[in-house]
Image 1 (spheres, rainbow, N blue to C red):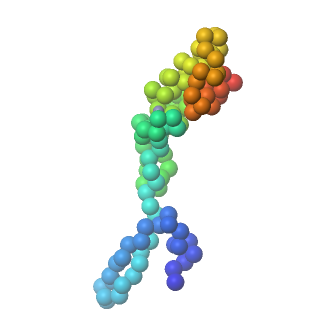
Image 2 (cartoon, rainbow, N blue to C red):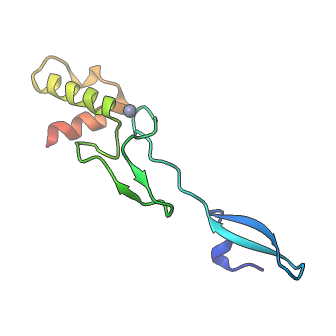
Image 3 (cartoon, rainbow, N blue to C red):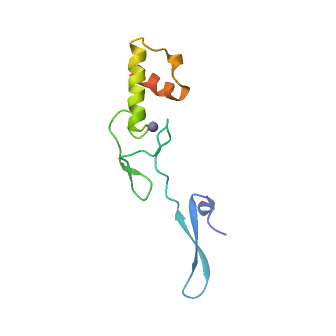
Length: 106
Ligand SMILES: [Zn+2]
């Protein structure tokens, strides 16, 4: 029986045959998926991932590593319109609202 840690599906199973002809299982961590935008679900640009799944670089702008650049622009625009009374919170979709509220509170 494999070790308890290897029973997790975060590990890929690799069937290997040793030089003596024994059949063994090797375990390898699955690669993490790339980060996606929280609004439009597109892959984020400008984030490099190392093989262990930790990002080595990210964007330093607002919502960097969370939202893509076009969604960040949209959120900033909406937040400014609400602050100046041109729009109301109820006019915004519920997905964008959380980020707009975060912008206004800062
Ligand atoms: Zn987006």
